[in-house]
Image (tube, rainbow, N blue to C red; front, top):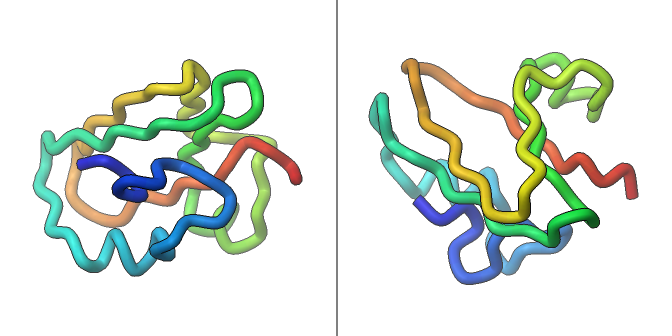
Length: 86
């Protein structure tokens, strides 16, 4: 799954990421593909609480290379935020 579709992982996508995620159906072992500006942004997997408060200080996973794959290794929700504080 290409996160954000044609836009990729950007600050202002043409389709809200929440809407995008609800429009798709994911299964265990599906792969998310994040494309973003290497060195200018990153993708952080965070807890639900950290997502709700935009806290990026204790990410579960950090994706930094500009073209990152993330395998959904369990059922349930996942929460991602940008590593760019702006």
